Length: 283
Image (cartoon, rainbow, N blue to C red):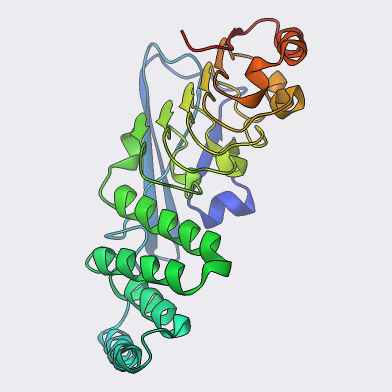
């Protein structure tokens, strides 16, 4: 039975659940999305003899880059002319945040890979010019960084992803990581993990040394076994309440959080997660 919600269709994220079917110990599955006579995308998954379950997901695209749009020469020429005009305006009004942001968006539409360094510089300038929207610019920076990294990776077969120390304030495109079993996001600036519910195969998640205040988004991870939350801003036991639904969780590090030095909170957490080995203090 193929399951494809509206969100999954838009993201080219397919889920296959073999509840009532029997497969040989070693087999290959392939799904092709066709519109008329045009193949939009194709995805393959290999189920080996030692796989623990007959379920999986895969994402792929036939485009050169999943983040770049195909455009006609006329459209590209129009955008290049528009960018040239805005760059000229920016020389005259160097402190105009709208012209700088427009250049960033035009560069992103034209060729985010080629313009990556310039986009980063302009985002630095926007943070200086428009402090009231600094979180928006930091999130936008995170999006560009993640897309730049993912564009150069073979995500379909990736099982381990490392994005540590990138100053990321938000995680994007988790829909592209359904087969990832280990994700390292330590030493960033993440404020939440709301979009992590799509990491259905992740077993090891490292979000140490970020800015997290709760675990909202982690309650839907059925295979999560090891979770590193040390060095965040967790202050009370209810911040970990979502973890009670993670049936396979067996190790949790919450050292170097405000809650880890409160004896009453420690007792509550221990009772809340009785089957989990919990690290409250750094060894």
